[in-house]
Amino acid sequence: MATLVTIPFSHFCEKARWALDYTGCDYVEEGHAPVLHRLAVWRATSPRTSVPVLVDGDRVFADSTDILAHADTLAGPERKLYPEDAVRRAEVQSLEDDFDERLGPHIRRVIYFYLLPNPDMARKLMDRGTPPWEQAALRWLFPAVRLTMNRFMNIDARTATQSRDEVLRVFDDVERRLEDGRPYLTGDRFTAADLTFAALAGVSVFPPESEKAYPSIDSLGPVPQDALDLVRETQGRPAGAFVRRIYREHRGRA
Image (cartoon, rainbow, N blue to C red):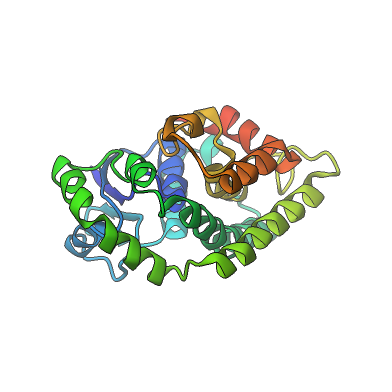
C-alpha cells in the first residue's frame, strides 16, 4: 500500500490527498508537524524537504503535481484528472502550474502571517493528525518552528500584503474564466485544474467538505480581524462559491 507523507493541514497536501481519494488509489496517510516533517521526508528518500511525498512501492513522488499525474495513471476512465486530447491536457496542466506557482505560495504566506503569532491557534492546526510525540515536542519547539517557517517562507507584513494582493488577482482570473457560464475551468468536466484551485483556495474559503484538512474557522478560537476579512472576502466572491461547489460535488473517496 502506498504511503502519503503530509503536513495534514497543508493545502498542497490536500491537493494530493484529494487526487488519491478521487481516483480511488489505496494509500495510508502519515501526518507530521511543520519542520518536524523533515525526518519523515528523509526516511522516504525524497530529493526534496517539502511535502507531500508519496511512496508507492519503489517509486517516490516528491511533488503534488507528480502525485496527481501518478494518480491519473491508476484512475478509471470516469475518474481521469487530465483530458486525453493533447491541447486540452496542456491547458489543464498550464492552469495547474499557474495555481501552484501563484496561488499556493502566496495564500500560504498570508495565512501563516496571521497564524504564527498566535501559538494556541497555530498548534490547533499543526497538531491535527500528527503523532503524540510531535504534538508534545511542538509545545516546546514552537518558537524555533515559527522562526524557521518565517525565514523559509519570507513572511513579514510587507510580503504578506503583496501576497494577499496576488491571491485576489488569481481569484479575479478564475472569475473571468468562469463568467461565460462554463461549469469548470476548462469546459464541461472536472479536471486537475479545478481540483488544484479548490484545494489551494480552500485554506481561505473553508468549505465544509474540507474539514479533514481545514477545520471550521470558528473552532480555532479568536481569529485576527485581518484574517477574518480575507476569509469573508474570498468566501463571498464567485470564485469562493466555485470552490465550495467543487468540494461539495467532487471531494471524497471514490
